[in-house]
Amino acid sequence: MTRRTAAALATSGEVLRLIRTGEAVTRSDLGRVTGLSRPAVQVRVGELLERGLVVECADAPSTGGRPPVRLEFNAGGGVVLVAALGASRTRVAVCDLAGRELAGQDFAIDVEQGPDVVLPLVMDTWDELLADWPRAVVKGVGMGVPATVEFAQGRTESARVMASWTGVVIPPLIRARFPVPVLVDNDVNVLAIGEHRGAYPELGDLMFVKVSTRIGAGVIAGGEILRGALGAAGEIGHIPVRDGGGVLCRCGNIDCVDSVASGTALLRDLRAAGKDVKTIADVTALVRAGDAETMATVREAGRRIGEVLATAVNILNPSVVVLGGDMAEAFGPLVSSIREVVYRRSTALATRRLRIEPSRLGAAAGISGCAVMVLDHVLSPDAVDAAMTGRAVREIKKSAMA
Ligand SMILES: [Zn+2]
Image (cartoon, rainbow, N blue to C red; front, side, top):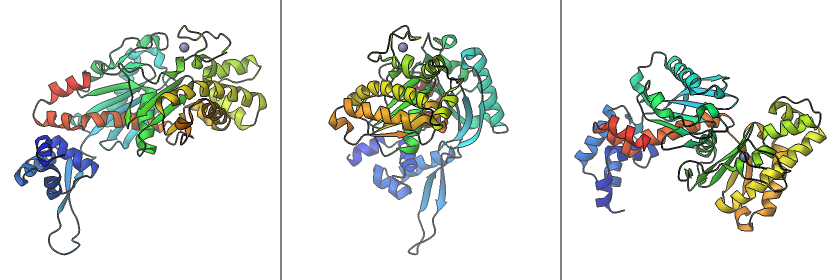
């Protein structure tokens, strides 16, 4: 990049990006990297200091003389509100601008009760967690929901899966109480973002597969979440398997991997075989106890999942496939059969360095993924510049929606 191009681009938002990433942490670094004049650097840094987005730290002198003042991103300069809604559990939290959880609460809520019940409860919880913090510290909201989401609109889709949420445009409902940018994505994308940033930041290509009540996947490609045209990328649960036995899936099709290998399917099959299992935890307990019949059923599910993953691996060539969700507790037998099928049926190049690993963050990936999603948006150079120049409300709302 030439200096002239850099200078033309180096707005206050860009200067914040350089400080956040550690690419330039003193005023002279900033001048050198951006090509901005000293007064121009001063103006931009002054704006960021005034808004509390950066703070100054004086380093101890090393070689004598006056040490340069170091600029640091101020993670305490605001908060984001996050909620990871799941079919079986929900966590609501307040995070700082580095995505660290400051306060949080788990609660069991049946999301099928619909947005009229669930969203007010989530917002009440944020209010309680915020306690005495002035509401002006809230910079954005990030939410994951267990449904397909048309990302740009924050509109839920899955009519036959979460009926009461069909077609609900979530952001305006939240903004009525918290007038900040609101980003909504499906729960598995949010887990993929959290696991990638938290455990594999060095990898560009990762696939996160959630095997729980349902089966779904989130794809990181080239370091970014892959959403596809509208937000439906990674919905592997409704890809059919061969010889599934003609099981009717709740989506209306036959032999979707979700209908033959999800936690729900395992519970159905094990109960039919006379096992006393009520929850996925009961299944994983039987696996840990070495129950042969349960192990065989879980292995068979792993082969079905492997069949679908083999195709996905051929298309996407990830470095790592991360298995998460409640069924990943039975990682041993599940992964051995997934691995067997994926290595047999994917191309040699796609599997040469492929790893299949259990989730390192577990359920915590949900909250951190929601935080990363909203922070990447509200701290982006464009969003910061828009806020600086007083176009804040109009422009950020537009870009959060468009
Ligand atoms: Zn289906």
